[in-house]
Length: 231
Image (tube, rainbow, N blue to C red):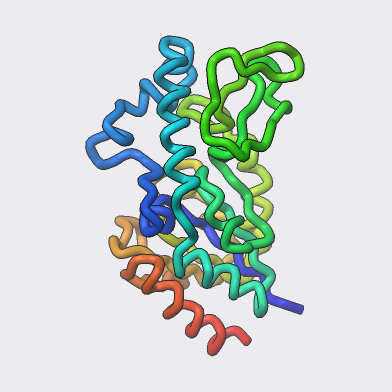
């Protein structure tokens, strides 16, 4: 039976494909205050701005491709039972061919009803407009989990983390909660590998191993370690 490899990915892995998927250290996201474009209050105050913001993010996402970091995660499925939990809203993991991807914060290439959040629609186009309606006649909005909204997939993510034989953390600083707390749900002595050029400021545990490289460099290195150590 294959070992269960659980992977938590963040903005760093997508950034190497040319996407800036989260706010900069100054609190801005592509020049916008996140409170204006990533909160229910921002949507209510200026839906035109929010819609255009995500239209541009979606358009950009359709112009980029998976990188070596994404590809290695797909390749690892040959040897491990791989589940990816991603904080990213792009679909680069799916484009790379990964089979099991859980999006904690929603997906750019989907929209949903503003009256029934269970009505979610796939998009193969970049522009969502005011006046685009769901089947119940309500305005469609980006299918993104905004600040202040519940993270409905969190319970499933916790279940996945608890079942991990090995956990990887790739391209995330482990400071964005609740996602960052997932490493705490692994069973005692579960090995955790962190791949990121910036070593996160967290309490080091005996089962943590750091690879201080960007994903395109660190993931091939980590693949070699995993194949030699756990097969």
